[in-house]
Length: 163
Image (cartoon, helix red, strand yellow):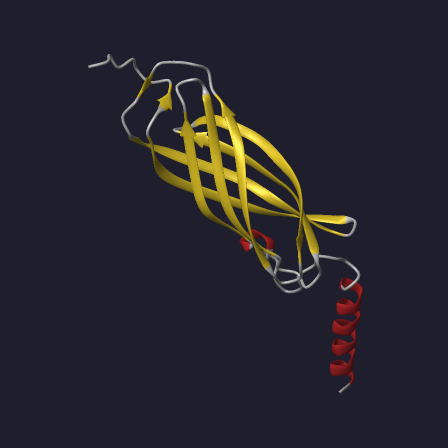
């Protein structure tokens, strides 16, 4: 009987001590690893050397504490070539245990070059993280996605003569 009380007392003390840390998700060590889902990825380039990455994410707060999404960082590679590494700063409120959609646009600058104008498939790999702020502490929820996308115009290809 005494050992049960001791164990219950330790569990209660641990729960009370952990409740002071905002953003903690007890008994779920991988909660932030599963908090971001990539819904859509679109990569487009123009002959003038401009490009854009459009990214749609679904971000879930695994904690019962309210948070704010402060930034999203990412690394984009197309066919193994790094296209962009950067971050976007924001201030999106996120209630405890809720979910919000995010749509982000990142400009891509590439040197003007010859390219294949016909649609081809390209391996796109995206890695990054969404940073959630809970008061004075932050937690990063990583995401990773690999897809094959049809990109109609890709910089760096061979010159195709006009018909």
